[in-house]
Length: 148
Ligand SMILES: [Cu+2]
Image (cartoon, rainbow, N blue to C red; front, side, top):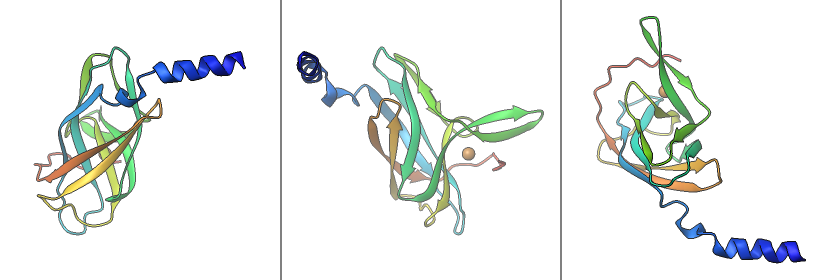
């Protein structure tokens, strides 16, 4: 019983309501697609204002049947995308998801992504937090071939 009381006390003291506010997304957008395209990507600048590393372990969106976290690596002269199992935002730092680098990959698009519309992307963190980010759909110059 003593343990339970301690647990409740610590829960009451922890700033659960503010848990997500340490992470800020800016310049988030999804790449507009031509009709019949099956894939797209979401980019963002993600800032971590806390003094703990934060880790994104998965993402989902209504707009796509499958979502993966991706990085781009150089293999010889070829830039290749590969799936990563997490995106770590170091304490008091930021990471940039951008074309040719880290991105959130959308597969099996349910319909084309039309410039001017928005999609919601739900990100799940390693500690169980979830955060929904609205990504405006924009046209992006695509210099990168989709090679998996
Ligand atoms: Cu990708």
